[in-house]
Length: 378
Image 1 (cartoon, rainbow, N blue to C red):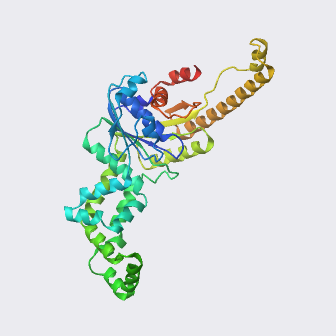
Image 2: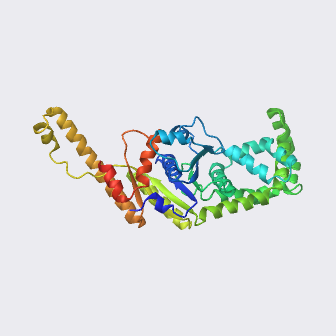
Image 3: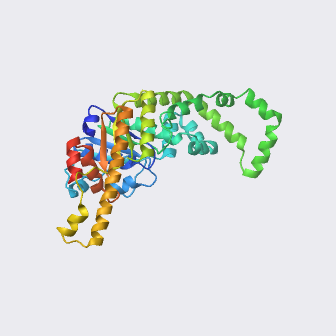
């Protein structure tokens, strides 16, 4: 079986995709750590609000710009860092602000938008903004040329199209007919306001303490000069997702529901003509040969108490049942998707919360299929 290094050979971007709770953040960090340790300058971008990535990399906090992980941490973990590892946690609001600053025709227009109450609400609440801003930040850093490789941890979602459609949804919002009408200084918007809406806005002004109509008008007028820039940028972001230099890695768990979601997710990616590299299944119970007669062996040959021996035997039987279930689910995953590349990362007794844990996962991701089997059996 192929290793993650072979999957990502000649690529520049890895996007870890899948539903929430399957280990995308940990997987993203492990992939980035492994590539950096092997000599590349890598940046990993995450949207994880729990800040697990920062903790696992030994950083107190992450911001909206990449920060380098101290190479000494790898040395302490017994790994030679031949490259550089950088990490950041996406701030959707800050990224939206940067996008406005980049597209504003002048400083005055920029300030009018950033300080506008309507913009502040839209930038925080616009449907799909988090997904789009993740793609936007990825595009921005890719265009900078500062890194050899980028790894993106996508927002947790049950809808496979949420982040794939995010650039399109933003473009549709900006280019939408209703928004275009209200951007015009005359026409329907003006006539509607003149027919009684002004009274309502005056009431709202007294209640809210500011002129809502004035804020809406100011925002739309200032934003109108940026429509083309936003639209072109969204199209460029979409093109980057489909570029052959990008590889989508579907991440899932071995249980029934995560497997079903992974099958659905990969099919949607293929329908959208996105470059899919492979599948990573986390927390897998590897099958173990033998094990019959464990209880008798413990009692007769090792002199273990019969009660303890019975509990150990029952625990072993439970593990084998889980391993059989996982193997069956993964087999169905491979069969339904005709997938040749399925990397299995085993179930660990402890959650991954530090660099040592990431490097343990890294060992499985960058190993061959036979090596993974040997590591899991040891």
